[in-house]
Length: 315
Image (tube, rainbow, N blue to C red; front, top):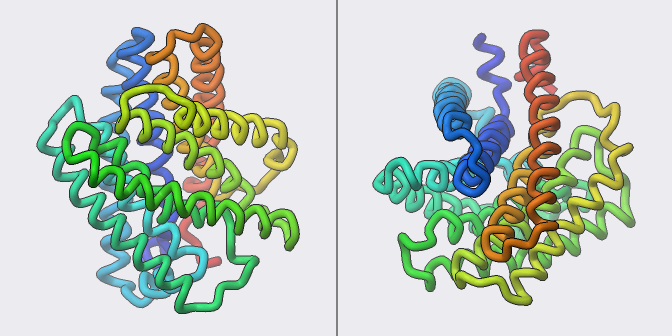
């Protein structure tokens, strides 16, 4: 157990992002399509329990193996995954909105402040340290574009001016980082196999951006549709590239499949609720079905690899 804690990776919080995304999908599906509320309620409890376990495990690592945590925090790739913790808090702020407004408000403020700190820390790290082009991958979006979750969680709670501050940061750096990452993928060495699932993260920024934009302005206009259409295009792209993902050896990075698919599903549900466009109605069910299938595959393989002691081992 001691060795497991020592090698417990910060990437484990991507599991929380996946479960949280699925939970929010079923919360929205219950209101919009009449799905049984018990599904969302069960997922709320399960997601909260898994978060508590992962949080306590990483806290134990921080206390007993602080040097390992510092090493992760200084790693050119792993530093980006520390944002998964603050993103998890923001996602819980969304999940608990209809359960406890007080809990949502606390989670929102703590998550927003922490994420802003991690954004500043990450960008300053990039500037202060020469970065190898091969270190860039879609996970770089996490500390930057996670800012766009603040307007989604904070709409109606804090001022739109503050929400626009976070929205601006996320959208501005999304464009810049996308150019960097596309350059790396096309003109340099291919991504390592274990990082291929992070290509799904390309879906998340425009999908969350669409949700945040609509939450702030309350309507569907050309800018909103631009963001949504880009999210759908990237969804089509990763589906078109499905052969790239078949046969990949299991890694925690598989959880990168789940949250982006959940984000585009929620974006589609929001679009349908605003437009009643019948095509989007069927698209919602298609995306929800795809999300469920991939979630079950990833969950099964995670449980299987935990049982075989293939997780939390030294790389």
